[in-house]
Image (tube, rainbow, N blue to C red; front, side, top):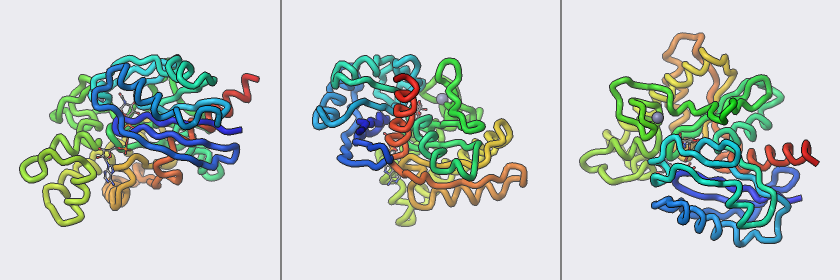
Length: 294
Ligand code: ADP
Ligand code: BMX
Ligand code: ZN
């Protein structure tokens, strides 16, 4: 049995086939359309799934946004080019004519990483630092989604009451300081107009402003992790997303956390499944749902 897994992020759309052993093949990636009108997103999804027709028995989607009852609602519409509501499950079922399971991207990635860590931990939190900052919480071996699928949107807790206005409408959210978009938005002078990837490489080349922007992001992450420890007694944090997985970033977060009082100390791991955590987690989740159904 092959599952067609799809990961919808604010920057890229990825797809791959996942077999019963979570082995991944035929991975493809395209850019998220800049103007995410519903039509633009539907066209991009059609392009992404076309090569997989006839190759899978069901579809599993990990997507940015609040994914409730198959509908994508952006908490931060800026991350999806202003797109707010999108009938995700219905659209994919129409495009590929297969049953489709949908889940938030960070919740899906948390599920994959929990499967990897389950022998050691029952309470973990996955954090993606990517276009935005997303989260997925596992408590006592269960994925916490909440009554409206909103649970885990930890990027929208406050990091700085005097910080920038977040696309969700609040002020100083972790996402408005730590995310790839936030790092790029805060860049000035010689770094203005550069994206987070370019700012990371400028930091590696010794650019002081770039280093400062990355440190600021990592510090917001430390405070978030300390808050999570206090609220959930989470046993470890798993970091993913292209910023979270960027060279040196996890270490900075870990070093910052070590400066806080001992009750807030907690191991911070890099995602075992790296950039595929969302794809693999969505597939695991869909396989379990389908098993329960039939
Ligand atoms: P998505 O949000 O679509 O899931 P990513 O996890 O790739 O996608 O996150 C996108 C963000 O990560 C962008 O802000 C991009 O500039 C940044 N980024 C991509 N590659 C790197 C890299 N190698 N180092 C640091 N940042 C990166
Ligand atoms: C935002 C929010 C979350 C998502 C997180 C990471 C939207 C569109 N998305 O906080 O649902 O999990 O970004 O998403 O409101 P990514 O695009 O960075 O992977
Ligand atoms: Zn916010």
